[in-house]
Length: 99
View 1: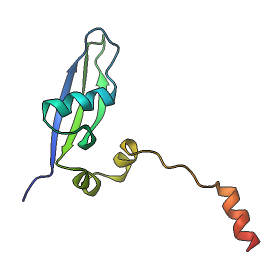
View 2: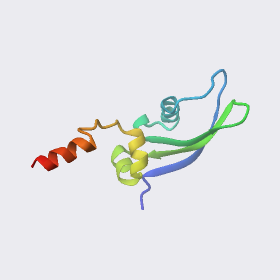
View 3: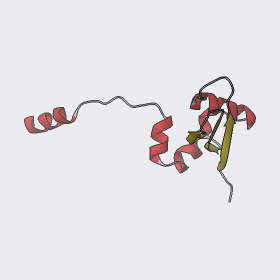
């Protein structure tokens, strides 16, 4: 069986900043593991009391297809671009009643 996902605990030491954004973290991990940032999914980061260090998890997939196939839908919704709502709930009901 070929693994398409790598799991790891990430400890981030932060100096001079309040915290790292997930985008910055994805870029740093991408350079460390020689991959692109779109296949990295960091989550569950907690800042230690007093600052200076954050701990969390990161999943690194082989490619985007593996990410979309393996990752749960709720995590995919966090990282993929948001979809615009076409219409509201009330508007759909009114259209249904007019037909």
